[in-house]
Length: 214
Image 1 (tube, rainbow, N blue to C red):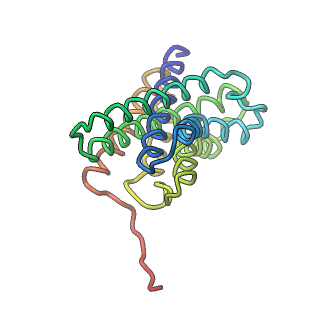
Image 2: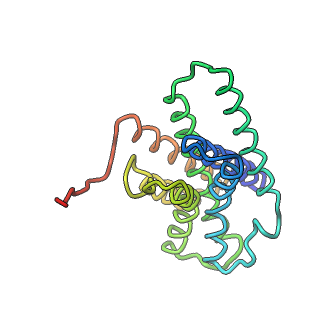
């Protein structure tokens, strides 16, 4: 179980850092901005989780491994983007959007599960409400901060079943945990989030909204 959670934490950190870096490059932000946005996206959700459950200082400040991983990933993403741009590679912007979608989906799924697991491992709280709340906040927190820093309306408020996918994955994880197969529950729940995000993006699924006249 520990190995699976370590794998998911590494996967989620890399995925969210890539999504933050790509969003920064799409906004034509400089190298420092790319690093900051990659870092904030990767560790933001975990920091919010630790603050909520009173695990202070947050893990990212006590163990810089994820911070270094996020910065390294963002730096690599920046140089890859710069290399492709300098060579005028005929990559359509849709490709970058697909990479952003995939990395964001995997980050969302991984950190939704890690949020719940963090509460269970570090506290005595077992209530369904707190587990779901912290799981979803951890999952969407990084993307929320990324969008705010980039000057976008956050995904959770506008498109493609974002927070809803995190809620579904969190519910699935709590239900599958009852089977006793923790690793299986974690992987399946993460994949549920990923598949919901990808299907929602492909079929343009959105929650109902109202357009009021200005």
